[in-house]
Every structure is written in C-alpha cells, then in structure tokens.
Image (cartoon, rainbow, N blue to C red; front, side):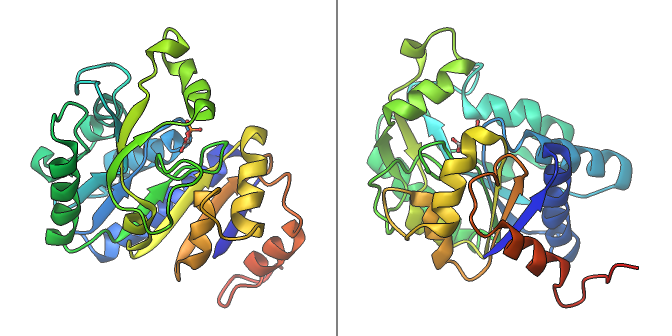
Length: 261
Ligand code: PGA
C-alpha cells in the first residue's frame, strides 16, 4: 500500500490522474473502474485536460462504475449516470458502448448484478479501480458490516451516507435508501486500486483504513489486502495518521525517486 500525501486537493488530484494516464499510455485498451462523488472531480478534470491538450486517448478504453442509486433514471440530475456523463464522458472520446454503470431502474436486481459481474470478467477484469472513501469508511456503497468477500448486489445505505449525500439533493428524504454496488470482493480483483480522499471530514476514516485492523466495519481497510494499492490524500485528510512522517520518508526515498539537490 502506497500512501501519497500532497498539500492540496489539486496536487493530489493531478498526481492521481497521472497514474491513470500512465496506464492508458501503456495499455490503450485498459479497463477502468470509476467512482463518483465530489472527491474524484479533480482527477476527472485533469484527465479531461490531458485528453483535450495532450491527446490522452480513450477510444479503446472500457469503464465500469462502482455503483448507482436504485430508483434514479439515467437522466436524473443526481444519478451517477448523469454525473459521469457531465463530468467525464461528454468531454472525452470514449465510445458510449464501452461504458458500464449499474442500472438504477432494473426490476431484477439479482439478475442485473450477476450480469454486471460477468460483463467485467468478459472484458478481462478491471485494470485500475478508482475509489473514494465515505466518512464511515466505505468503498463504493459497501457500508459497515459488508463482507470483505461481497460481490455486486443491492445494498441499504447507512444513515451516515444518506446524511453525507443529502447535500446533493433538495432534502435528505430524497436520497435513495438503496443502491447497486460492486462488492468488496469484486473491487479487490482489480489489478490496481487507487483511492482518493481529501478534507478533514475524511481524516478519521482514512486513518482507520490505512492504520487500523482489516475489518468489514471499515471496508476501505480491505485495501491492505491488495498487492497494488495507492492512496492519494491531501494534508487535511492525513490529519489523523500516526505514521505520517514514515509515509513521506518512503515517498521521498522510493527506488528511482529523484534525490533532492
Ligand atoms: P465524496 O464521497 O467523494 O462525495 O466525499 C465519497 C464516497 O462516499 O465514497
């Protein structure tokens, strides 16, 4: 697990985006796992900039999103379909048939979730999965208590998540209670995991995920089980880490890292 701490949200987002670009430049037909929420916005902005100004190519890329609210149609302003279209897809050259997002309107959740898992497999698995973290320590909508072996399924959202996400809706009662989400087990099968987190509101969850025990009560702690995971955080989100100096030391002295003048 590599912990990369940067002073600001912008720097952290740009560096995380460069990890994605590095993959696309070596594997143009990569399969990307995407996340929604306010945190990855800076990362997507940088990917769009690299596409527009530097020709970063998405023409062979396939994507799978982590989750979607049940009951919201793709045109609903708070659906994750809408979010992805507005913040990424309409600004890059990805063929729309290569995009996968869980259905918010399926009537057969079980069959849909099974199809989603099979589709990931058919596409060769996810090469790199982008993740956010909830203030309750969740990844995707794998709320506290979700099995670390869980697969794509329908989940009931925790009250904390509903409160956190109410800021995007007119009122808390409008936040859907259910979502379809990839499971922790699904996420752990990706070739590489890249988690982004910023602001003091995430400091506790970030510290629990990195330095706490691996447990289903903090599903982000499952990253400790993955052989290739990176966590990009800003100074504020790093506020509760006990080993901050250690992570900075490791980053400054990575094999091949430039030595200070
Ligand atoms: P946020 O959500 O980026 O909007 O804080 C993160 C999450 O809940 O995974």
